[in-house]
Image 1 (cartoon, rainbow, N blue to C red):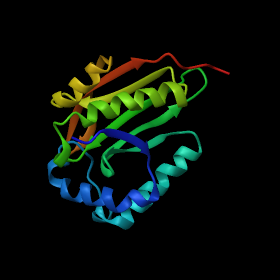
Image 2: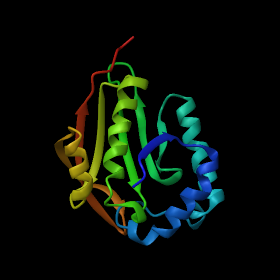
Image 3: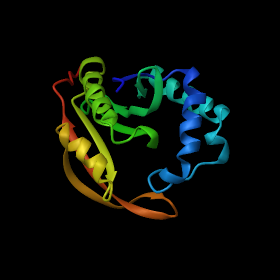
Image 4: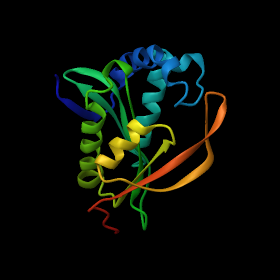
Length: 177
């Protein structure tokens, strides 16, 4: 088994991401919002990557990819970073169905926690999961996240509104300057 790593997303990741997303579009329809057809193309992903890197440049996000060996297998990000008295961000991730069940997501979340604390100096990370996403909830629990509430009709996917469980994890970072 190849080791799992994460790194900042790169413009050259567009084709790999579009391939994974297109392949898993039906499988992930229940978890992700509806997207236009061009989202699943290399050009569409190039635009997404450019936008993510612009957010990173402004200090609003750390957009990354999950890598197994040399192969991009998914994405992991810390987004909506708030500074000042909050010092927090939101953790999000997905891994290709070809690579699920092998511990990649859990290892990637552990690595993202280090980045949030050491590089981004955050005090808190939050995440959201659908009520029925028990695999993701297990990953979050394993890494010390606690659920703190449910938002009803919070997210629209697969033609319907869905409730979301809110998760939090305090970090050692978070100096306020």
